[in-house]
Image 1 (cartoon, rainbow, N blue to C red):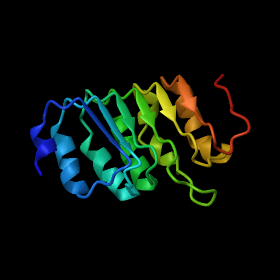
Image 2 (image 1 turned 60 degrees about the horizontal axis):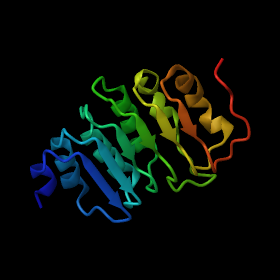
Image 3 (image 1 turned 135 degrees about the horizontal axis):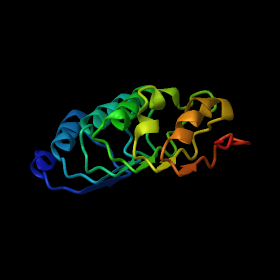
Image 4 (image 1 turned 45 degrees about the vertical axis):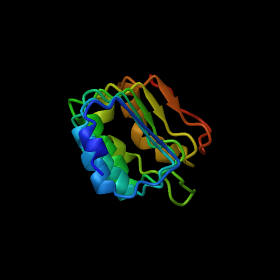
Length: 169
């Protein structure tokens, strides 16, 4: 019950293809673990508001370098929380994986929420993976100028609806 909150020296947390029963308690435990360097929550059946709660608890984690929330259902609240996390001056995240958020052509990621706090351009993020989210060029428009001004050197857009990618000038 109190495992995460008592494991304050935990550096890596990798959960794959399981459900998190009590998101509020889980988030509280994450918030107390300031030594986390990697958090992987892959296929953990998390909805948008649950992801937002967890991401909010990670603000101020200056050790966190890798965040993978692949195969969940992040949408507006999740991307908003990620935008705030990236804008946090203590954030040193280098690798962010938003692969396969179970989007469809009618229900895509609203990327403007990721950049609205200015965090992407000022962050330490070097790799951003948006694979398999059915994103089109138009849906990617809100982030192009921010990526061009950022430290992102690897942007994975495989399995989206992108035909041409504007190169930074």
